[in-house]
Length: 259
Ligand code: PEP
Image 1: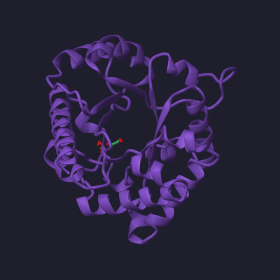
Image 2 (image 1 turned 45 degrees about the horizontal axis):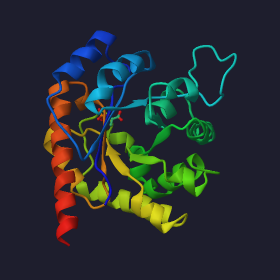
Image 3 (image 1 turned 120 degrees about the vertical axis):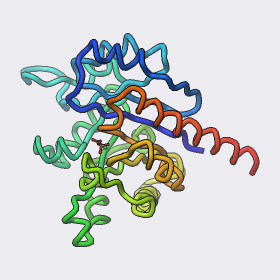
Image 4 (image 1 turned 30 degrees about the vertical axis):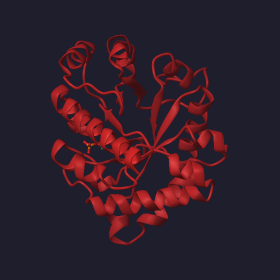
């Protein structure tokens, strides 16, 4: 049985004081699901100090693939690892705005793993690619290129986030059917590497997840949680999303106990 993951991608939002206020205001309790928050690098240390006793896992939003040196403005995976367990790699905003291509992303994935970080590796097609029926081809390419040269042990540490670009920040969430079909495709594709890994790898959905649509997405067999942008910024809203994730995780445990 795979654990439900509720991950917040705060993007370039919040100050240190707002991080403290957020954590203090959260009103969810969880034991079964995993809660990850990914703030800007400048906030990692504050979130680490305020959130670690609450069971919040910490993720960064980016790393540079070189380990150290003259790379002004960049942060290495070892530097991030001081505060975080996870790092988002391949988010569509990094691909589109910052021009990160598959080969750069692959270097980032390898660097993260090398430092002991678990990559949350994002893949997703644009609306044009979906309209022209290229979505499966695109996702396959992003997976093959981004996860190139990883050992089977490395792949076990990856979380895959399926984030259709047309659903990110648009309010247009994928239907449960679209999400399930793509998550099934991704899991099946990982079976080419190893069947056990495919069965256990977390595949989470991202794109306009909100309190009123999360449960329907989460109920899909191959959806193991969500990467949430806008709706993760408010402490009470995010707490409600955690409550949905926790309840679903408990339901899954009960179902597997009774079977
Ligand atoms: C994201 O940026 O990863 C995301 C899914 O954003 P939103 O939930 O706002 O669509």
